[in-house]
Length: 464
Image 1 (tube, helix red, strand yellow):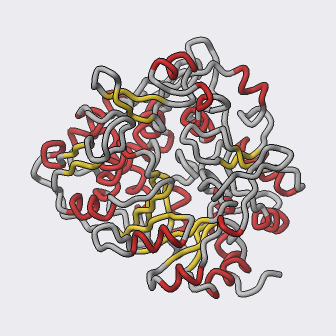
Image 2 (spheres, one colour; image 1 turned 45 degrees about the vertical axis):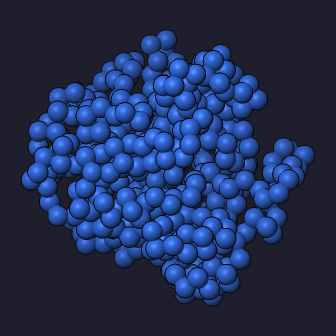
Image 3 (cartoon, rainbow, N blue to C red; image 1 turned 90 degrees about the vertical axis):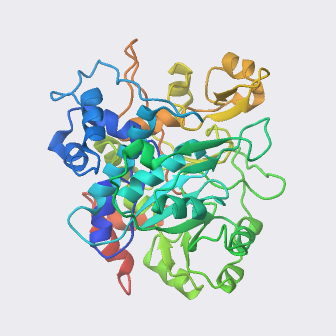
């Protein structure tokens, strides 16, 4: 539910209903900047910015990005600083603000629990993102798409406003050679509020990974989300040699599912994700020893989520009539992880739409840092144009079929870039492959459903 599909409105509704509402923490610096450029309808961004503990930082962001009348639809969005290891003050301020705003709004007006979800792959963004969320009082941090060994220590440090040097994996360098530095006192000053240390949940796909993280106090999370291969977004690749069906999709087998008895034997709380978004799924999860379930697709399609309304309407319509197809694409994501893609007319799920898009990479959230021959560090992305990617040492086969998820996911929530040429970025939808829950809800609520209606259905003792 990345790039603001699971936004503050949805998380707030879930939290107010007594469950853990989770916002996506990816690209929130850009989300804030683009919402401000669109005029901040309703004044929500400005209301949250007014609560930021260092007013002059919020004022700088408003001066830079806020357009009271909103931008003209033909006007491109202004750029925000790209992710790099050596980060400017402007970049760190905006990243802290973006995460603060999203979590603050999700927590506004109630005492329910709110979490934020990050990707381990996006290491260069993690310190400022987590710190901004903590300034807003986030209760849980969740992280997947990698093995999040460093997060428990990072949260401990940030809770004390300590300077951190967060390790970043750089191709061509030994692990630990590079890090992103964040000095909260230098960035924000000494008059900082006390912070609580949020709980940390590691999202993993295998019991062996949960066992590994639980073994050492230094890297042990507070719990786990055990995610199966049918969950939306990025998935772990199939274990062993990949077997493809006639459509080129990887086939997942028993080895790709965690042994839940072994997860339960660790003795730590865990939640199950992927195919558990029904009342029966919740019961099965608890019978397996889980505390509960993590549900994405059911809530991504709710009226409280942040899909662009016409996209949500079309998705729900296709779910209701049984025509929506979700595939596992081995090539779409520049991360190299399999990625769930919902087939939708006019989106990058269609080859002709991909062909019409100019191949470019100007956001860089999924860029990979690497060491150049001269010893300097640069970023490359498998979704950028092939020639620059090759000049940076990328292999042509790694670039084939890759899609620009960053721009597409912004388009999913109505924040897609308009190019100077007039080209408008197209969406690419990700959902879980198991659509049983949304289909059944669509029968109950043909006009769409709210997050609270989804929760009432999930938590009902029986399903009529």
